[in-house]
Image (cartoon, rainbow, N blue to C red):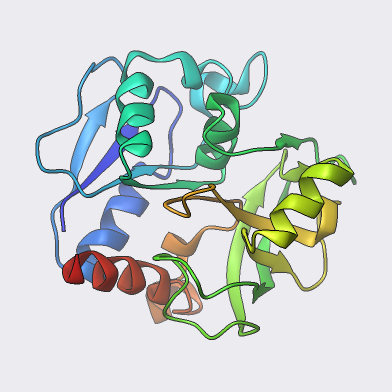
Length: 223
């Protein structure tokens, strides 16, 4: 499996995400600067990392979503490529329209940084197939604008199409329907606010994030 990690000014989880791919899947991800106009050849998955791209000015992810490389990421996703957006990466993916909904200020108006319990809402995706539906996992969060907003029609569609990947067990930020992560219509793009790359080694406090990267690698190895 070949992975590319997109790097924006203000990204601070790009190396963490690369290390997760490296340690769990044994690959050396390519780091791609936001001003590039093309992805490296032969890429299987693109990672859009967490952080504070462009200082979170205007709206979180809004400026990054207009970077030159994003056109290539959008084309890659529309051709069926896998894309993982974590935290700020999730915000970027909603700003591009690759994922529905919006990420707003946490309901409590405070930055949150702590491990949280999640329920795996579907195992029917390359990202979540390593868990059984309903499994409980612990993954850290670190965000100020993680309140996922979806109107009634969108929430109904996400639920009926089984596109809610993760739900918070104890909603920390006010997200609609306790949503912590959602899938695209073709189920090949995942956006999630919790950081699985921060839960791959015991020294980090837990290893529940490993299953996501292993699931992805396993599915693509069979392709």
